[in-house]
Image 1: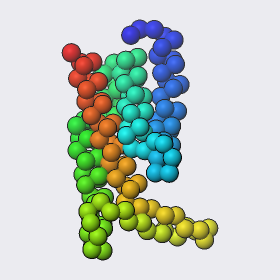
Image 2: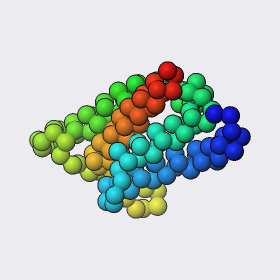
Image 3: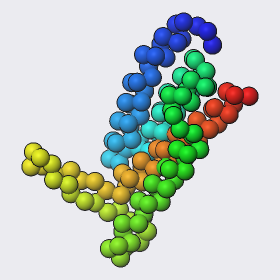
Image 4: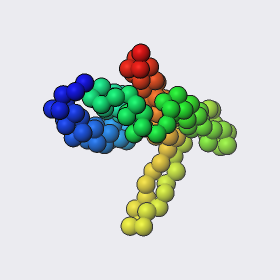
Length: 137
């Protein structure tokens, strides 16, 4: 597309869409959202960029093949099921760790968040694989 308005709007909308996708990912454990919706937002940002400029430029910004992103996300999601096995719980049982912060507070990190991050990358990679394949045809 050669519209200067569309390209300019895409340049301004791309970073906030990625930030919002990370926000939706991180709030998804307690509120609506999570890895699936966050991955859709991130994929939509790159799809918009590919539509405004070109698939080649969107691939250049991504710097990875979307199929590799999908494989990495699947590996992260599967690896999130391993920590409960070490404490003799079932695969994919939620496990949390309290990480101390310099301020004296603690940050609770759990396997559900790690699983959501894996789903985020799987959805992101699959969506971009479809969009880039269609755009290159």
